[in-house]
Structures are given as structure tokens and as C-alpha cells.
Amino acid sequence: MKSLSICLISPRFEPSFWGREYALPLMPGDKRAWMLAGGLPLLAALTPDIHDITLIDEAVEDIDFDALGRFDVIGVTGMIVQRDRMREILARLRGLDAQIVVGGAYASIDETFFDGLCDAIFVGEAETTWPAYIDTLARGEVPAYRHAQDKPTDMTTVPPGRLDLVKDRHYATASMQYSRGCPFTCEFCDIIVVFGRRPRVKTPEQVIAELDDIRAAGFTSCFVVDDNFIGNKVAVKKMLRDLITWQERHGYPLALSTEATLNLADDPELMDLMYRANFRDVFIGIESPRAASLVETKKLQNIRGDSMAAKLARIRDAGIVVSAGFIVGFDEDDTAIFDEQVKFIEDNTIAQAALGMLTALPTTPLYDRLQAEGRLVPDDPVCNFEPRQMTRAALTAGCADTLQQLYTADAFFGRLRRNVSASPALTERRAALVRKTRRTGHAWRRQLAGTAASATMMWRLARAMRAQGQLRSGLVMYVRQYSATPRGMWSFGTFLWFCLLHWHHHRLTQIAPGTDRRSMNYFSAAPVPPAKTPAE
Image (tube, rainbow, N blue to C red; front, top):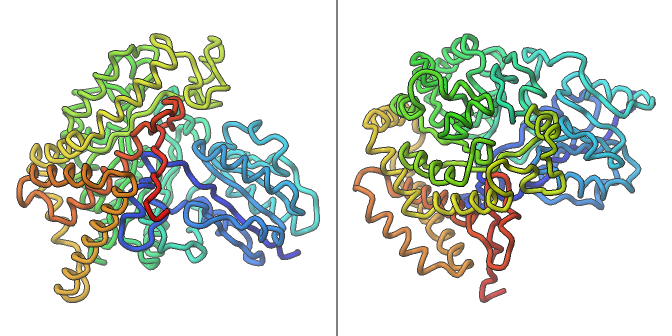
């Protein structure tokens, strides 16, 4: 077989709730992306060893298009929020003498979006189709255009990603996937279309091996990227017991977070296992405080049993902080939904709330229903359907206004403070985890490093506020929040970290003067362009 030179590209993201792009430059070190894009290292691991692999994550480095001519294969992968940049990259690649291929989450639900831009497309999972495609090229044969697996991937066969090929120092946190698939039937979700409703999981041994690699790469935090980490409760409990042993043996080296469904609150054993395994945070799709909207979208797991507020309180008391996603634009939503969302988020002290408009993704049941009803508006990149009880303009403006309301400094820090004061169990359990964490080096060196990190964050935040013409108002804003925080609630370094998070949300939810609110992203309003500094 011929040895191929292969380049795999992940396009940059637009600033969003998830990316924390405005906080990253303010962190110590040279962090350029919040989370490691796990798809590229996995594809590299699936590629036979005889081939040369280069990974380019545009979140941490620019693409040198002039240097791409040396590759035999160039692959581009991405999600819906990267689709426009994917097309831009693919359009620039068409003149190269290389096989241009595309795959990933968005290609799996909207193949026609990439018509005429690639030589091959991968739909769905690619653990078997990608190596087969590379082998076909290496033999000098002409591969097919469309590649889709005949059956779902057996997760016990998935290798760990090639972390040796990534620029790990530029990422704030690592990523790992434990399972694929979700047993629920939310109408708007493409996960059950792409991965199915029967969750498939890795073995505990696979998970431990991957965490060993992540730890060896120098990461201290990891996001488990499953769309529903607890989809298979029997399997995840078994895995968590092994994970607890691993954390205890190594002195709790990795702080973990993930996504799960609200029925986590109905399983005390599972919550305790996650806490003991050092899961600090969980993102939960609440979507709406309106039961009618949840019934409409078939998110019935949120309304079974007692109230959502009671469920959220149980998760918090178990020692796990909740961030949550919310959606506006369901058929059962009228303009009163915006105030209802704010009230629910404030009442339940959810500091980081991702509020976005409903989006009809191709292949989902929602898309098919709205298409049958003649309500799709495919030419609108912001709101691609006609809401039933408000106009698209009202939905877009209401979402942007609500985000601004949620992320004033008073609102954000107020939720943080109330979250701590409302749950002594949260404070106690988190402190217990900190005590279990094995610290290396002398105490004075750790204290010096902490002081240096705080000084770096303060200086960089001040520069960022000055660049936006908000130095005076920003200092007043954060000093007031520090003064309002009871002494001993957080360390000064923790408070500064919350300031960085707030600055990101503050920048993200501002509306630039003279711009159209309709340019907002799925989870964010249009960011304000950076102001020029006097030196520029």
C-alpha cells in the first residue's frame, strides 16, 4: 500500500456560550480553546500506522492554505455552528490535487449542504468507513463518494485518541466520550437520529486508559462529551465504581463534568457515585419551565415525578453544580415565556444558563413536522421556522433581551451567591473533595503560583475592559460584586475566575450599536466588535 499524507481540520467556532472565547485570553498561560476537539485525535487513531497524519484545530492555530498542497487527503469535520466556516474552507481547497473529504455532526444531517465541495462525504459514525476509505486510496483504487456504516459502532472497539498529535497546552480542558445514543425522544434532537436510542458504552478499562492518557498530557479537567452520560444507568454505575478507585489511587487528579438528563435527580446512588468520581458540574437540558412545551417536544422525563425545582435541588445537594440549557420558540410559547424563563433560572440559582431559540435541524422529527406544515424558513440562518404564537423578529429580539437580562453582573453573581448559600451540603461536599485532592510540591510554591495566576487574571481582565472602553465601569461593576460577597464564600482566585466567566457572557450578550439582533448565534447574541486601543 502507498503511504498517504493526511491532514484533518476542525474549523474555528464563532463566539458562543460553550466556547468562552472572551474568557480564554484572560486565563494564565496561552489558552486558545476551551475544550479539545476529540474527533480529530480519534480519526487519527483510526488511521493505519503507515500513513502520516497532521491535525489542525483552527481554534488554536491558523490554517496555512499554501502548505496544504503537500497532502494526499484533506478532511474537514464540524458541527452546525461550524458549517459556514466548513464551506469556506472546502471552497478554498477545491483547487488542490488532493482528495477532499467532509464528515462529522453536520454532514451527517445535511449532506446536500456540501454538494460540489468534496470528493467524499462521511455520514454518521466512521469507525469502520474511515479506515476502509483510506485503505482504498492506498491501494490506488477510486473510492465511493458517500460512506455510511451498515450498523452502529461497537463502542468497546473504539481506540483512544492520538493526544500526541494535539497542541494540548492551548486547551483549557480535555474531552472524552464514554457513550453514544439516548433513550429519550425529544422532537428537536438529532442525537437519536444519528446515534440511535439504545445507548452504547465503552468498557471501564477503556475509560481508565483514556483518562491515563489525558492525565499524562497534563490536563487537570475533562469534559465527558456524551449527550446523555446516564443513558445506560446500569453500565455507567459499574464504570463509575472503577473511576472512583482510579481517582482515589491518583489523588483526584481530574475534575470532571458532563451532560445528563434531569432524571439523574431520581437516582441517589448514581448522584453519589458521580460525586465520588469527582464530577463537579453537569449540564442539563431543562428547555422550558412550561409543562405544555415539554409535552409538545416530548421531553417527558422532565415532568415525571416531583417538580423540576426539587430535582435540581437534589442534584445540587449531592455536591454537583448544575448549568442548564433552555429553549424558546415552542408552539406552546408566547411572548410571556421570556419572563418565565428568567424567573425559573433565578429561582433555581442556575448561574450559567444557555438560552437559545428552537432550531429545526434536518432529519429530526421537528424538521419533518414543520416542513409538512409549511413553516420552515431555510434562508434565515438565525430562526429557520415560523413560530406559532409570535413573529420570528419577536422571538429573536426576546431571546437577545433575555440573555442580556440574565447576564448583568448583579444577576450572574447573585445566582452564584444564592446557589452556595441555599445548599450547605454543596459547600460541605465540595470542600471534602478538595481535601482529598493530592497536592504536589511545597505549600509556599503552590501559594506563589496561585498569587501569580490571580495577578495575571486581574491584569488581563483590566486590559480587556480598557480595550472595550469599559475599564472604569468594569472595575466598579466587579468591585461592587466583591463587596457584596460574604467573606469566606470563595477564595479571591475563585472570585476572579467568576469575573472572567461573567466577562465572557457580558461581551457575548451585548448588542453592537447599529447591528441587527437577528445575527445572534444559537446560544448567544451577536458579540460586540472589539474596540481599538489608543496604540492601534
